[in-house]
Length: 309
Image (tube, rainbow, N blue to C red; front, side, top):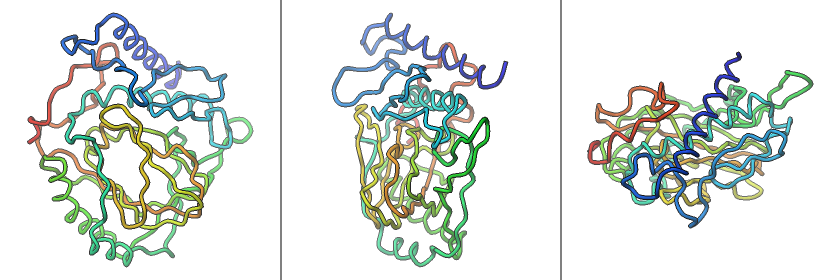
């Protein structure tokens, strides 16, 4: 049995468990695992996954219909199975990550001094292609005949003149702002970018790494677009928001809890972001895979925000 087949069987077990559980429990908050089941009909709610590869589209948690049979975006059976794994994580992980803020996101202006510093440090002559893995997170490769693939070259990394200084300044500037917004003490984990999206690029809806990417920021450094490119984000009420960032703006968001992505193909010349990630400082934060060994019955939520303050 191949690894992909095994993962698909595990995935099917998780989905079957959720469906059975939702059919057998009431909507009462006293019922164990009741939060795994869809709630109400207000807004755009998360959808339960079904695997129908013969159909041309798959509807994600934001209600966006993914064209998952198009070889131009690298789709094959392996990539479709990977999308189902991402989708299951979008459904399950948010139930276990404590809610930190009222809405889960906030759009604000990048501090002027930081924004000017980033523009000075960005080296637009130092460009490299981002490594493309054959997964469902993005459409960085196309499928040729048989099992052959080639890079679409639609995501680049833009260099900076002093990378270590950029990392230090970004973290030191944003850490107190994100701590004030989230209400908890944070530890910096990653600064990634400048990342440059090119025409046709998209990014599937996903939740970030539970261990390290919990409270995050997207900094919109620069762009040349033919039409605005929205970030889809499913908020705490399970309602899909479309968020537009202009150069000099940034988005704070609870990245391990709220599914987010840019599923619409980018229509423009370039779109430059920096991604900044933090995790809770408290030592009780997750140290292992949340669902490891719990495919049949995921564990109940461990903590609330009070445990992280």
